[in-house]
Length: 129
Image (cartoon, rainbow, N blue to C red; front, side):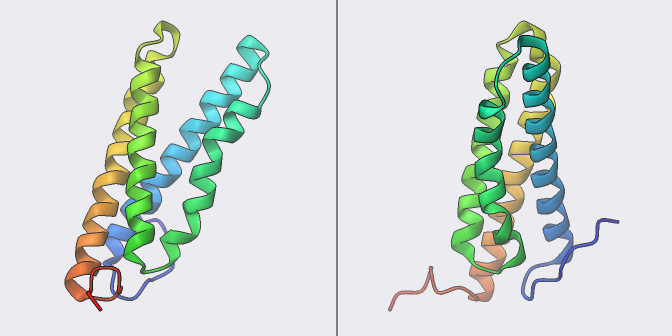
């Protein structure tokens, strides 16, 4: 079981799934960047650029703001797109599948959380003033 900080209004199972898919994308970005660095002697800057959106969005997982989870959905789509780009490279095809799945998993989980927050009306983003 993955320990998570309880966020009022969000089911713990959804939150665990979001943390797990986010962590998987983070780990895959680290592995891919490290492998590129060692095999082609590339600088670590591409890896850091891939990690930046994942690290900047991490605090959202501790809140109940629907807007943040919508951004997390976008980050998941970016992760899946990166996996599609990797699938075109012959030597990195084995990293593409897990990255696509983790990105789609994060996207669906974040959308389910947004839907739950919308139904509970915990965030004012969907209310008209």
